Image (cartoon, rainbow, N blue to C red; front, side, top):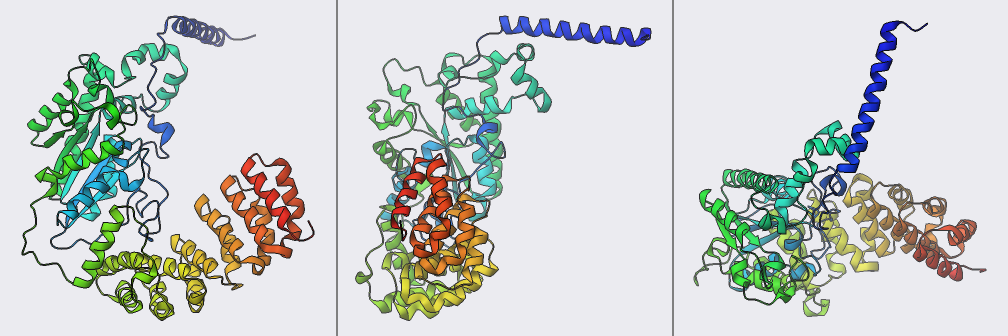
Length: 552
C-alpha cells in the first residue's frame, strides 16, 4: 500500500500537470498571432555557425581576383603591413555594403577606392561586409579582422534593419528558458513575446514610442559606443554612414525620424555621421534593387558621395609628393590596382617583355620587404605569365617562409603548365608539409602542370576526406587532371562517390571520365550513382562519363 506522503506527492504532481496543461491550452487559444518578421530580419542562431558571427570560405591569398580573400570576405587580399603615406579606410557593413546582387568590383567600397586612387590618393578601401551582419557582427569584424590592418578611418555602414535585428537577437531568453519560449505559448505570453520582436523596419517609424523600439535603439547605441571606443583606442577616426530603405524615397514616406535619432546620438557622442537619405531624397527609386539593396547606379552614387567627404578621402595629394620606393613596384602596383578596380582580366603575356616579368617575379619572391613582395606579386598577375626563366625564382617562392609568397608561386607555376615541370618536387614537398590551404594549392598546381608523380596520390586521397567541401572537390578535380596516371586513386574515388556534397560527387565522376581504361573497376559504382544519385547534374555527368569509357 502506497504511503500517504507518496500518494500526496503523486497527487500534487498530477494536479500540477493538469493545471499546466490547462494553462498551456488557454494560452494557445488566447495567444496573439506570432510576429511575421520580414525576410531581411535574421535569427543569428539559425544563420551563423557560432550563433553570432560568420565569414565565407577563406581564400588562399592569390590570385588577386579570387572570389574571397584570406579573411573570408568578398574583397582582394591585402598585406597586413602598411607603409608611410598609405591611407587605409575600412567600411564595415552588411549585404548593402557587400554589394548584394552585383559583382564585387561594382560594390561602393571598391568603387570608392578606384575613385580616390584616380584622384592621386594612395589609399586602400576595405569592403568588410557580409550579408546578415548587423552592428554586433560588424563590431566583432573590426576586432577580429580589421584591427590588424591598422586602418586610419573606420566607417560603420548602418542599415535600418540593423536595429531590429539587435532587438530580436539580443533580447532572447537565455538557455533552457529559450527552449520553453519556443515551444510554450504560456511562457511566451508570460514573457510578452508579442511585445519583444520587431517584424519590419517600418515599426521603427510607426511605433517609435514602444518599448521594443526604444530597446532596439538602446542596443544599437551601445554597440556603436563600444565600437567607437575600440577604434579610438587604436588611434583611428570613426564615422557612421546611414543608408535608407527604399520606402523612404517613395510617395507618402514617413518623416526620417530614425535617421534624425542616429545623427543626434552621433553628435552627442562626437561621432561623424553621414546620412545618405538627403542625397537621394528626390531621386528615383531605381537606385534600389529591392527594399534596401542599391542598384549599380545606387552604388555609383554612394561611392561618389563618400569620396566627397574629407573625413574619408583625406587631403588631396600635393603635386610634389614623391612616390614611395621602390618606384618600379609602385608603378606596377598602381596599374594593377587600376585594372583591379575596373574588374579587368589580366593583360595578355605578350604585352610585357619577359625581362620585365622576371624582374617583378624576383621582387615578389626575394625582396626583404613583405609589402614589396605583396605588391610585386599583384603586379605580376596583370603583367601576364612568365616563361621558363622564372621557374627557379618561383621554386624559391614555393619554399618561402611567407605563406603569401608560397600562394603566389604555386598558383603561377600551375598556370604556366608543362614548362613548370622542374618545380614538381618542390610542390610535392610543400603538399607534404603544409596541412592548410597551401597543400591544396600545391596539389592543384601539380595537376595543372600535368605532373604524374606517384607521391601525390596519397596526398590527394587524404584531401578527398577533408572536412571542407572546397578541399575535397579540388582534390577530385586534380586527380582527374592527372589522367590515366591517377589509376591508384580509383578505390578512393569510388568511395568518394558517396560524398554528401553533390559538387564533390560531380568532380569525382568527371575524374573517372579522364582516367580512361583505369576507370573500368568503377563501372558498377557509376551505374549505381546513375540510378540513385539525388542530384540530376551528377546523374547527367555519369551518363557523359560512361559514354567516354572504353568498352561502353
